[in-house]
Amino acid sequence: MNKETYLTEYPKHESMRENVKKDKNRLHFHMMPPTGWMNDPNGLCEFQGVNHIYFQYTPFLAGWGTKLWGHYTTKDWIHYKEEEPFLYPDEEWDRDGVYSGSAYTCEDGIHYFYTGNVKLWDKDYDYIMNGREQNTIHVFSPDGKNIAYKKLVMTNDDYPVNMSKHVRDPKIYKKDGRYYMIQGGRDAESYGCALLFCSDDLEHWKWYDTVRTAKPFGYMWECPDLFELDGQLCLICCPQGVEKKGYDYWNVHQCVCIPLDYDFTPGTWVIKTTDNFQMVDRGFDFYAPQTFEDQQGRRILIGWMGIPDADYTNPTVKKGWQHALTIPRQLHIRDGKLYQEPVKELEKLCRNGRTFSKEEFQNLELPKCAKVQIDFKDCKNMEFSISDGVKLTYMDHVLTLDLGNCGSGRTIRKVWIEELTDLTLFADTTSLELFINKGSQVFTTRVYGKQGKAGLKGQCDARIQVYEMSGYEYGRI
Ligand code: FRU
Image: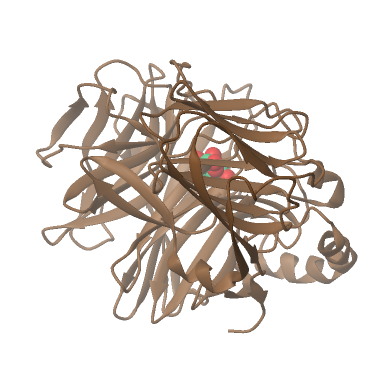
């Protein structure tokens, strides 16, 4: 679909848009597709005081289809503007989808790199070793909205010869005056890895290194992100095909943060152990996040509140839309561990705060859009009922999120923690985001149940604060 087709089609879908707006499952302080399907956040950046959030988008279909880049902007993370889609599959080299990519800001504009997906239909292909092109495309825009040029900078022939046709999702990292581009990949032996390319001018790229694990960690790594945070080099990526281990890796696909001791010596960089890999999120609906550094120097992460290939569902599909993005989170590394906290701007949405003791916090109907902050003292065990059938329990150092019958196929997820000190819950109609122990563990999930009563019991002291959350405002910027 090119821009002209989109602009012609768009008015025909006005009634779809109106129906979607009326859906009671719609969220209030999350970015969602205006209609249709949303997946990965793309091209995140702040340029001249405006934050740009692009996303994988199929506007007129609430399922998998040919991707455009949808676009929201915000100056304050409270007021949002829906912009016209930014990228369309309008060239031979991206005709089956403008896949995921990232932004790199300069004084005079924004550089974008993304994957142009092409499927070859003429033979009986396996779409792994053949039948697919994944082209790296460079776009420049002076303002985040208008495109000055779109250029093909690499094709599969420029990737190492031991790779399958799956190489995608470029992200830029600048170090010592040199540009590095990291891309996710699957090699010919179905071994997941990340490829590094380098360039001095953002125009000419050549393969530099491959980052992989000593033993296979999944068959494909998607959406890699390389950045330095609090003095630590980090790689976040999404491996597919990782086996469940203890309470880890229960989702169909994963998202991990790897503290990397990589020194940029070219060759092949082997990560010796996966023991220090951290799951970025332990909920049912989290995948393909992207980070960027904003103009205040904060490292902000936004994830796709959804996951591909899951066997659970979203009833919103019947209403003409599916998925959302997580609330923006500020990242930190402390003692080699990842911490995620909702950006402080969200506090401006909090209204009518009330404080309860554990005894007072019983049989309480939480607002549909709520923030709940619980500070524990001496918590041996506890059960926090969030809504009808949905609860979070802590027992023998195991924290369990149980969606009961409200998960549309989503069941339970767990984590072992030494001590439960605090939790912050953001509940938005049909989503929950739980930040545990100052954000050292996070659970993000969709939930489709009845409201029901909240309450807290167990062997613990607790102070509970409840706020109503008002929604984002759209259209004014
Ligand atoms: C991750 C992903 C990316 C790809 C995009 C396509 O969810 O599969 O690897 O670029 O989505 O929409």
